[in-house]
Length: 61
Image (cartoon, rainbow, N blue to C red; front, side, top):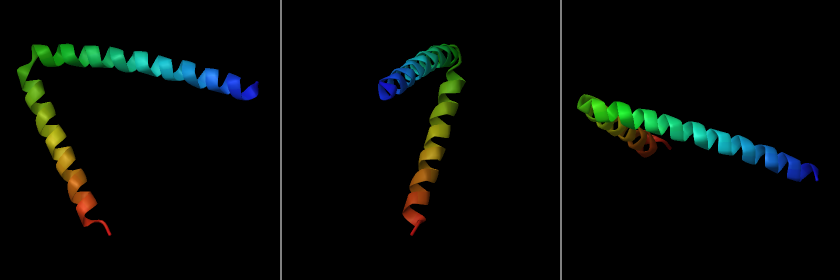
């Protein structure tokens, strides 16, 4: 019974976070659609972050 209540609470929190994330995605897509420079910046930033992650993973022991 206690576990079920905890699970229900976690499920409600998870659903709320999913809705919040969906709202951010919609807002973000609107901003990028209006500004082509933003999509270039996002692509560049993602590439830099991915390169840093790969470099870190290759150099750790």
